[in-house]
Amino acid sequence: MPYVVEAGKAKVSVKEYTERCVDVERFLGFCRECSSYNTRWSCPPFSFQPLQL
Image (cartoon, rainbow, N blue to C red; front, top):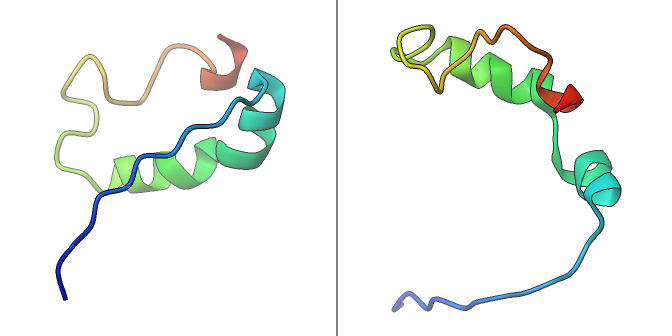
């Protein structure tokens, strides 16, 4: 079966996106398991709360 790439587009408010699509605790758990955790500027732990930006 060949792969197909399809592009999608939607408009959503930041509030709705955050409520429906952002799970900081879940993804921080994945980050903790990564070998880059706490070794790169873009990787946690952060000196701020991600959702307060």
